[in-house]
Structure formats: C-alpha cells, structure tokens
Image 1 (tube, rainbow, N blue to C red):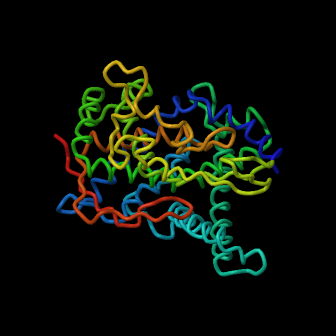
Image 2: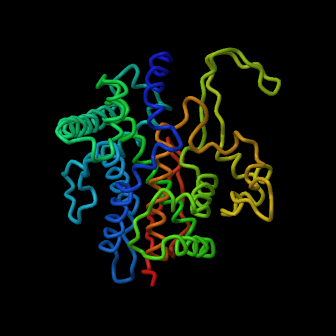
Image 3: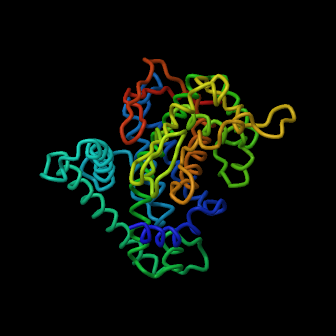
Length: 376
C-alpha cells in the first residue's frame, strides 16, 4: 500500500504541490467567488442577515470552485433555486454523510464484523458521491478532447493525463480533491469570517488593505494582487492556528522509537494534538487571542513572531510526503473568497458564542447567522 501511494503522489505532486501551481487558476476561482457574492446578496433578509445554514452555502461555493479548476466545468451549485434533488446538492449531502459517519466508524469498528447501519450509510453515500464525481470527470474528459488547447489554460485533469495517460490516476486524484476539498475549505472559511466578525478592528485593517489593492469592488483579482495582501494571508493563518479544521495529525510508526524516554513499538499510532499546542502560551504569546499581526514581521524583526514557535506545533495541512494534496488550492480559494466578501461587506455576528465539535474535523455546530452590511 505504501509503494502504491508513493507512486500516485509522485505523479500528482508536481502538478498540485508546486507553489506556483495555482497561479493560473485565479480567474476561474474569482468567477465562482463573484457568483457567491451575488448569492449572499440574494440570501439576506430585511435585517441584512443570512440564514443559519451559511456553511451549506459555503459547501456549494467550494464544490463549484474545485470542479471548475479541476475540470473547467460549472456545476450550477450557486444557482438561486437549487433543488434538493439536484445532482450538486445530493453530492454535497453525500459528502456530509461521509464525514459524519467516518469518525464513528474509526472509533467503533464493529462494522468490520457485521454490516452496521452506520457502515451502510457510509457505503451508500460514498458510492453515490463517487458515481456522480466519475460522471463529471468522464463528461469533462470527452468535452475537453474536442477543445483546442492552444488558446486556453489546461485543466488539472488534462495536465495529469499528459503526465500519465492512465485514467485511473486522474480519477483518483480528482475524487480526492472533490471529497477532501469541500468540507475542509468551507469550515475554514466560515471560521475565519467568524473570527473577523468578533474582532472588527482586525476586519477593518484587512478592509483597508483590500481597499488599497482593490479600489473597485468589481476588480478581478490576480495572483500578483493576492501576493501583496500580507494581512489577508495572516488572517487565514491565524484562523487556522486558533481554530484548526484538522485538530491533529496521526502517524503509524514503521519502526520502534524512543520518545521522551518512552519506548513505543512499531505499529502504534502516534497522535500530534496540534489544536492544543497552538492554543497554549508556551508556543504563542496570548495564544487565545486572534492576532494576525503575529505572522507579519514587525519593527525590523528578521522573522515574524509566530515563527518562534516550534515548527511542528502549527501544521494545518500536515507535513512531509503526506501533506494535504490540495493545500495550494485551498489557500487560494480562501484568499479569493474572503477578499471578495470583506471588500463588499462588513461582516457582523450578534448571536451566542459559536460552539465547536471535534470529530474527523473541528467544525462549528452553532448556526452562523452572519450579517452582511454593504460597504460604500
């Protein structure tokens, strides 16, 4: 299994993991983000608030974004009257079931011996999602065959097929991006907006940066503009530190080791409780506070304050060969949509403190009834 996985990653990493990989996909991500802004305006009530199921709307945005850059295909997830039985909505619902059941299946492994109801739900949702995703991939593959490649940017799928014509590799990569890139990116974006709403002075500082680089609300974002937005990137980093979507990492030992004086045998799972480490003053000054400035060099410092923490404390995307495959694209999607939202709206939250639940992901369970006030 390890060799098969390594072979797969060696083929997809050059396409997905290079720092420059996402730069040519800013335009399609920007287009989806513009549609999302229109969607937010449609959702607001007379008090300029949106319904508490805001994360569901983010799921639609995330799925639309990842399929657009992977396949050059618009699913229509952000259409005004998306039907509950539409393919995009059913794919999103299936993903929710997959993540909901995966955690309990890991903890209670009775399914290995009998067909439990939870296992049946997981299999049914997984089969449906895979079936719909494969249908999208096959349709895109056929359509792209008939489009000239010399006057457009190649999709991620096409680049992978050029590198390795084995369609199985492309299929696995696309399924992985779809499944892993919707829930995680959606929750991370929602939490960042929540923290910005709770810290209006930080939100205004971000707005001033956006106003400088994007004086017109309708300006199309570019990779050059985004690279100049240091405070935007710092807000995302600080959000992922304070409320990381993945609360920790687990690795299975391939050999016996001695750790802090304890001998741990091969085959044991070792957990890294990053969420706890990131919230302790030992590693970050005033660790419970939302301070994006800690990620920016201040007063001639040779490095940002946050970089003084142990390098393995803050790992929102993992580390090493098994680092998150879609990291570059998740960061880019968040940067674009957050820039669009804060440039267009002042975001407020006037309800109870949001509660979080830690399962497979660390996610909010309280309805997020944000208020989106138009900026002049």
